[in-house]
Length: 429
Image (cartoon, rainbow, N blue to C red; front, side, top):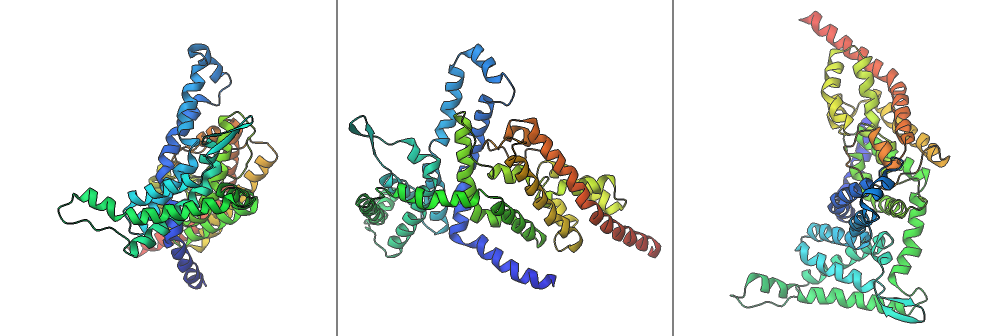
């Protein structure tokens, strides 16, 4: 039975993980993730969740304190659509075998062609680009522009639409002429796309994507059912030795990314946070210590189990797990293809999501603020920082303790098996 399930799941996971488009989406967001983390730290310092923190520093430095940190955070968060286009086009161009920098350059130009460039001031229309089009609301426009422009660029390149320069011309000059016609082809197509949309009631490609695609997808992703499916699939894949989040993130990342940016923008502006289910919800309130919320299992292993094998493994893997690195235990116990531990490994994160969803829905815990912390941030600390409240830490502690009770009977079964094996080995020796 187990082998049959593995035979079904593994090819599906491999196809998702190796799909060039999905892989490029994942890799593209990873390119800009370091910027998001660094900028989030600045935003967190400027709005640290301690009563009177901001007022204290304003009294020292004046209102420039807010301006300084807002300038840093805005440098990234107000341009997330543009940066998404940059990261995804670079990753997709590279994965398609193109010179990635040229694919990225033409994708950025294509994105700007589709971006509205006028605004009304009173009764006058002036030329301007509003950051609303370049920021979180423009992420899906950036995503589709990146994929389509690179694919068109790849097509033109494969058709050998190039201008070959004679030998002796510097390499950089020759290379720039090689991409001249493919770049022109992409720009022409996006020029026509802008013209076509301008002749419709929608007006712009931005309006079409935001109203027809981005908003409905956000509504689907911002649901308990969506997150439960995410965490269930990720846990099941781990049980077969496949990095679950690496696979399912290929599908969920764009949606969760947009929801997170919405919360971050609201937090930055002191507004009500709109969404429950964000990247921080999944990272900080569904699993602790790695996939399957195995920090709870490790506590049982260290303080309840008697098998030498389990105790020694627990001592080795507890520190990495505290910082979110669960692979040593997943592959060392192992969890992989272990039907005894697989049951609580799947159940525990699902229970955590249900409890967290209830806690956030009833406002027992403030919504996550969209601040992206390093993924190695330990629980309790992450709960406090991502919600700005001790109640976030309390929720994490409750779920870790509950996870201990879920894992306990299964860990004891495994412990008895290992004890028997160790006893048989000692008798044999």
